[in-house]
Amino acid sequence: MSLPDDDAAYAKLQEGDYGYLLDDVPHFTDYLSDLPTFPNPLQDHPAYSTVKQYFVNADDTVPEKVVVQKNSPRGVHFRRAGPRQRVYFESEDVKACIVTCGGLCPGLNTVIRELVCGLSHMYNVNDIFGIQNGYKGFYSSNYLPMTPKSVNDIHKRGGTVLGTSRGGHDTKKIVDNIQDRGINQVYIIGGDGTQKGAYEIYKEIRRRGLKVAVAGVPKTIDNDIAVIDKSFGFDSAVEEAQRAIDAAHVEASSAENGIGLVKLMGRYSGFIAMYATLASRDVDCCLIPESPFYLEGEGGLFEYIERRLKENNHMVIVVAEGAGQDLIAKSIAAADQIDASGNKLLLDVGLWLTHKIKDYCKAKKMEMTIKYIDPTYMIRAIPSNASDNVYCTLLAHSAIHGAMAGYSFTVGMVNGRHAYIPFHRVTSTRNKVKITDRMWARLLSSTNQPSFLSQKDIDAAREADKLANKSYLPVNTKEHGENAKKLANGEK
Ligand SMILES: Nc1ncnc2c1ncn2[C@@H]1O[C@H](COP(=O)(O)OP(=O)(O)O)[C@@H](O)[C@H]1O
Ligand SMILES: O=P(O)(O)OC[C@H]1O[C@](O)(COP(=O)(O)O)[C@@H](O)[C@@H]1O
Ligand SMILES: [Mg+2]
Image (cartoon, rainbow, N blue to C red; front, side):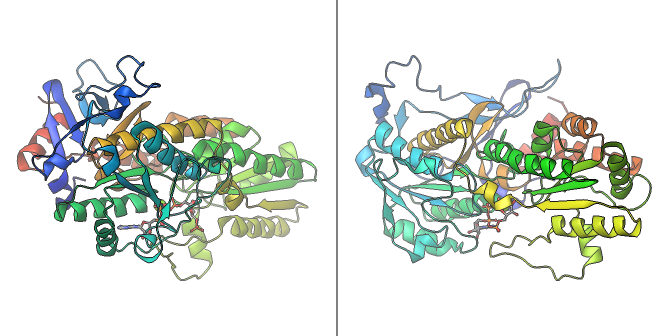
C-alpha cells in the first residue's frame, strides 16, 4: 500500500545519508511567507530556564524502528517533539480551543487540564476555550472559556468535562467558526476517526491560508492507533479490567464446573484483552478479533472448555468485543448497523458465547454455571491512573510546544520519545495485535489455550505482517516514490 494521491500531496519528505528519511509534519512556512518569529517565553520561565538544553535541537528526529541490523538503512524518522528556541505566536495573540471527540477513555480530563495549565503557565496564554460535545460543538454551542482555576481538579474525574460525541464533522462549518472567532490553535483529542477529522480541518485551513495550528492528541482505549507506542488510558483500562477478571475468577472457582466470562473493549484490536490476560494469570482463554476461533470439533473452544473443566473444575474466559463477529453473523441474522461516526456496531459476543456454551453443555449433559460480566463502560469511565496521568501531561505539553512552533501534527510517543507525526500516518493504518509476534505466543503459553490456527492461517498472518512492514512508502513525487522504494529494499 502506498499513500493515496491526496496524502502524497501533503507528505513532506527529506532524505539524508545512509537511507535516512524524515517523514515531516506541515508547518506554517509551507504555505505562508514572511511570518515573524519570537523568542520562546520559556527562556525566562523560572522553572524551565534552569534546565540545561531545555530547547530541543531543531534537527532532532526520532526513528520509527529502533531494532536494526548492521547494514540496515537508517529508515523513517519523525520530528522530535518539544519546545523550540523561537515560536510563531506572541502569547497575547494566541486564541486556543480544545475539543474531545469519539468514545470515552481514562485521561481525557488530564489532557484537557494540562493543555489549559500548560498554555497558561508555560506560554502565558489567557484565551483558551473548550468546544462542547465533540466536532459539532464548533458550530452549534457556545465556546467555554477555560482557565487553570476552572480545570484545577478535573483530572480526578473520569469522562470529559467538555462532553464528546460521534458524527457531526462538517469541515466547512468547523473552519468557518475557527476563522470567524479568530482561533489560531486547535487542540483535538480523539481516536482514529477524530484524527481523520483533524486532517480534514488542517487541509481546509491550509487551503484558506490561515495561520492556525492543528494539534491532534490521539485517544483510544483500544490502543489501536498506528505508529505510537501506546495510547493514554490504556494502562488504566488494563488495570481496571483486573477487577472484572478477579470477580469472574471468584465466581467460577466457587461453583462446580464454573465458567467466568468477561468481555473487554477492543473493536478491531485485542490489546486490552491480551494485556489484561497476561497481567492476571487467572485467565484460561483469551479471544481477540485478530485471531479467528471456532467452537466445534477438534481444537475448538468447546473441546478446550470441556478439558479445562475436567482438569480444574473452573475456568475464566476473556473476550474482546470485536472477536468472533463473523461467527455471530453466521448464526444470527442481524442487519449491519453503524454509529453516527460510521463505525460498525458490534453484536454482543459475550452474550452469544454464554448461550452457545450453555447449549453445548446441556447437550452433553454437563452440569455447569456460567457468569457473564460486561465491565466495558465501567472501565472506560474511570479517571486515569498515576502513570497515565504523567503520560497525558507530557502529551499535552508536547502538543503545546508544537503548536507554538507553527506545526500541525498528531503528537505521540515513538520508541519512548515524543514526536510529531503526520496525520496521514496515524489514520492510514490501525495498530493490531500481531498473532505471529512473541507477545501473543507468551499469552498462548500462559493460558495454554488452543491457537485455533491452521498452518494456512499462520502463513497468511506472516504474509500480512511482511506486507505491513513494507507497506508504508511515503511518496509525494515520483522521485520520492522511487527513492523510498529503494530505501525499503535496503538500496542506497
Ligand atoms: N473520515 C473522517 N473524516 C472526518 N471526520 C471523521 C471521519 N471519521 C470520523 N470522523 C469524526 O471524528 C469524530 C470521532 O470519530 P469516532 O470514530 O466516533 O471516534 P474516534 O475518534 O474515537 O475513533 C466524529 O465526530 C466523526 O464525525
Ligand atoms: O458505545 P460507544 O460510545 O459507541 O463506544 C463503544 C466503542 O468505543 C470504544 O471503546 C473506543 O472506540 P473509539 O476509539 O472509536 O472511541 C470501542 O472499543 C467500543 O466499541
Ligand atoms: Mg475509532
